[in-house]
Amino acid sequence: MSLESVVVLALVQGLTEFLPVSSSAHLILAPVVFGWPDQGLAFDVAVHVGSLTAVVWYFRAEVIKLGIDWYHSTRTRRLVGESALAWGVLIGTIPVGVAALAAGELIELYLRSPLVIAGATLGFGGLLWVAHVWGRQERAEGTLTLRDCLLIGCAQALALIPGASRSGMTITAGLALGLTDSAAARYSFLLSIPVIALAGASKAVELVGTPIDWGPMLLGALIAGLTAYGCIHWFLKLLAVVGMMPFIIYRLVLGAMLFGAFW
Image (cartoon, rainbow, N blue to C red; front, side, top):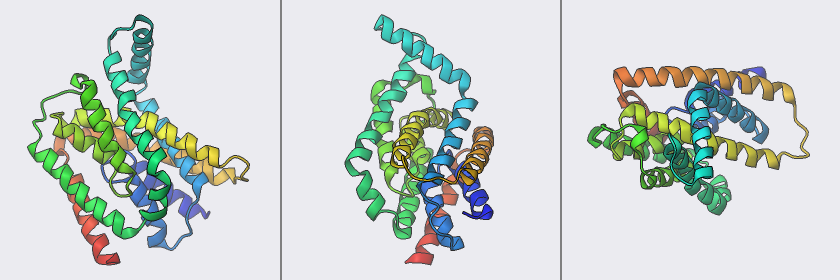
C-alpha cells in the first residue's frame, strides 16, 4: 500500500466508524474513487483495532464499571448496579453474530457493490430521519430493557449490508424506542465494542500464516485510533447542539450521488 492510501483509508475508517454514515461503505468506495487496489483484509483488521482501542479508551470508566457490575451479577445471580446495561450490550450482540455466521460470506460475495451501498445509504438514511423526527427522545440508555437491547441488536444485524451503517442502524432503533440522540449514540458506542472485537478476531484468524507488512498496518491503526477518538468526542458534542439531522442529510445526498454515478 502507498503512504497516501494508508493515511486516507485510516482517516476514513476513524471518521466514519462511529458516525451513522457507514464506515464499510466508505472503505469500499474510497479505492473505487481513487483507483487504488483493494486494501486487503490485514489493513481492515488493523484499522478496526485502532477504532476499538479508541472507543474502549474513551469509555474506559463506563466499561470498567459495566464489567465489574456484570461480574458481580454473575456471582450473585441478580442485577447489580449497571449490570442490566452490561447484559443488554451482550444480548444486543447476539443477533449480529448469528447473522454473520449465517450469511456473512454471501454478503461479502454479492452485496459489496456501489448500487447496493447507494440503496442502503439512502433507504436506511430515510429510516434514521423517520426515527429522529418521530421518536419521543425522552429515555436514557440506562432505561433500556433486555427486550429493547435485543431489538436494537436485530437492527444492528442489518448493518452487515454495506451502506446500512452499524452505528446508523443501532441509533435508528434506539431513537425509535424513545432514546434521546445522545443516549442512542452512547449505547451504540458501547454496543460497538464486542462487535468490533469479534469481527476483528474473526478476520485475524483468516490471516494466520499470511505474510504481513507491519509498517502500513501499525500506521493505519494509529491514525484510525486517534481519528476515531476525536470523532467520538466531537460527535457527542455536536449532537447536543445540532442533533442528528446533518448526518441524515449527508446520507441522503451521498446515496443520491452514488445512484447518479453508478446507475
